[in-house]
Picture 1 (cartoon, rainbow, N blue to C red):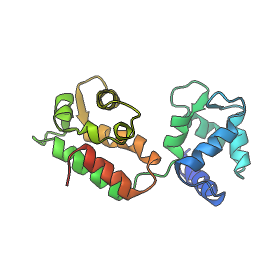
Picture 2 (picture 1 turned 90 degrees about the horizontal axis):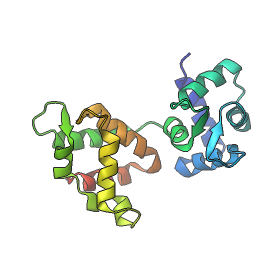
Picture 3 (picture 1 turned 30 degrees about the vertical axis):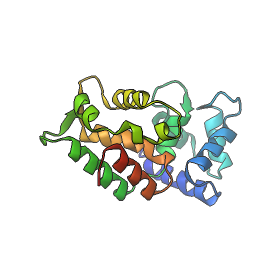
Picture 4 (picture 1 turned 45 degrees about the horizontal axis):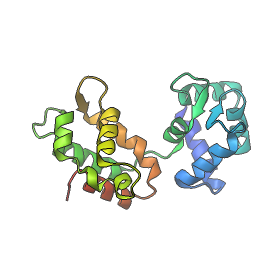
Length: 188
C-alpha cells in the first residue's frame, strides 16, 4: 500500500485546520502526545491524532502509516520522524540550490565528496545556529559530518540532498532557505 496519498491527505487536512509550517505541525504533535513523553504511541496516540484531524482511516491504512513513520521500530513516532514525513516536500528551488552547493564542493565531478572537502568550503560561522548563539561553529561542523557520513567517508549527492530534506521543514520560506545554503557554502 502506498502511503504517499495518505500523507498528502493528512497534509491537506492539517492546512485546512489552520496549522501551517513547522509550528503548526509541532502544535498538532504536542496535542497528540497525551503522556507528554515527546513521542506519539503508535497504538493509542497516533490513531487518535488521525481521528482528531478529521480523517477516518481503516486499520490497514493506520498500520501502513505507522510502519512508515516509526523508522526506528520503537513503537512510537518521535517528533523528527513525524516532521520529516508530514512536512511538505522540498520545493524545486530548494533542491536546485542544494544541488548547486553539492556541485560546487565536488570539484572533480566524481559524484561524491569527502569530509575534508566539506571542511574546506563549509562556512560554519554563517550557520543560523551559530549566528544566534545556540551552538559553536565546531559543533555545527561535527553535526554536519555526523549527518552526512554513513561510515564510508564519502557523501553522495543523494545523501547531501537528504540531509537538507531533513532541515527544510524548519525553514518556512524558500528565500530564507536559499540564503542559508548560500551563506553556508559560500555561494553567489
